Image 1 (cartoon, one colour):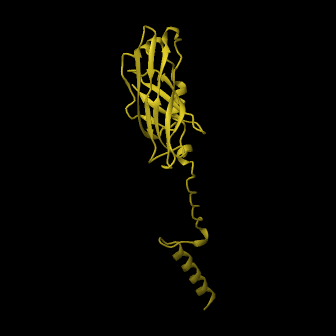
Image 2 (cartoon, rainbow, N blue to C red):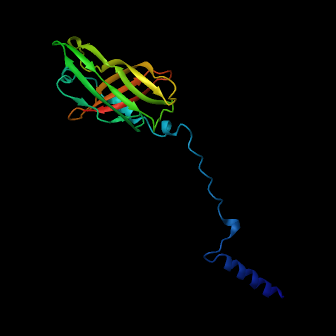
Length: 203
C-alpha cells in the first residue's frame, strides 16, 4: 500500500467516526456520578420549617379574640402538620366555656397518629390528650399575648408490648395575621425525652 492510499484510509476512518451513530470514545464526557441515597433524616431535614416560621410571624390574641373562643366553635378538622409542612393524621378542637364574666374554661383536646408516617423518627405511634382543660382569667388579659394551655397526653410507641406513657404537653394558640375569618395556628409541644412539636390550623 502506497503512502497516498494509507492517508486516504486514515481520513476515511476519521470521517466515518464522526457520522451520526458513531462516537469518538476519547472525547466523550464521563457518565454522571450516581446520586447518593437519601439519608435517614430526609423527612426531617428536606424542607424548610415553614410552619415554625408562620407561627413566629403570627400574632397573639386580643381580649375579644380570647373571649370569642367561648362563642365560636374553633375546629382544626384534620389539619395537622409537622414543622416542615408534612401532613399528619390527627384532629383537635379549641373549646372555651365562660364560667364567670372573666373566668373561662379553656380546652384543647387533640390526637395524633403516626403509625404510617413518622417524620420525627422517634418511634412514637399515637398521642392522645388525657387532661387538656384549664381555667384562664381573662380579666387580666393583655392584648397580643398568646393563649397557652398545659395538659397531659398519653404517648404510645411502636413497640406494642410497651405500655403507653403519660407525659406533659403544651399548646400555644395564635392568630395568623390578615386572615378572615380568623385562622388560628396552634403549636403543640410534647415533652417526651426528646421534645418535639407539630402544628394545627384551625378556624
